[in-house]
Length: 113
Length: 116
Image (cartoon, rainbow over all chains, first blue to last red; front, side, top):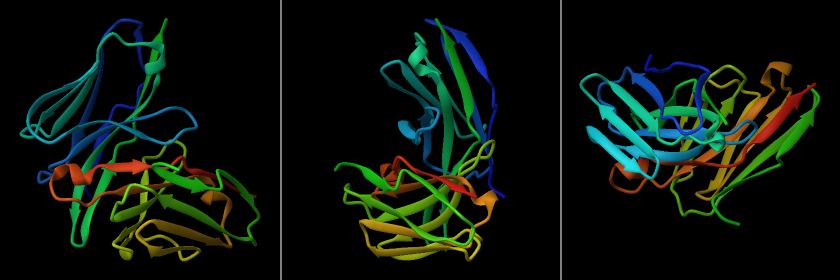
């Protein structure tokens, strides 16, 4: 069973701090990795995609990928109360007839002002 | 309309009712998905359609019946549901274009379903 593991949290950080969210996956052949943000009562919103080892930065967000360790992380710099949400890690899984995403349970982030 | 839309946004139904959920994507994508999201559980993949052909049924009970008349529309027909089927039902689409970015999935707003 291919799995994606995340610490469910909650992760609490003060406003302005760096929030670090982590994810591990079991399928060694996965090539696409995604972070989604989900506000309470809303649907998941894609915020970061990463496909190669190393760091990818987009504004206050940095995704990090280490395929050898099967590890993906998301750093949020200068955290704001509006960043309070559940963050879902997703990893592609190649099926016989196409591709699907496997999601972790999500990490709940709370940013206090 | 832009992105992925879903109707209705909220649905309350009895166990003997028949209802349908609708999803439409305006992104020109080739693949569409149904997911179920229950409290305290990861997103569960239900069905996958590529170019309107069903390519995956993830052991979903037959009381859920999907339909994909074309690449832009996806339906989920519901009948004789159980209270434990109450959840947020999410539709997503994927471009399927070449390259790894073709794996990105975009979600609709979801239908909050309550089965009494």
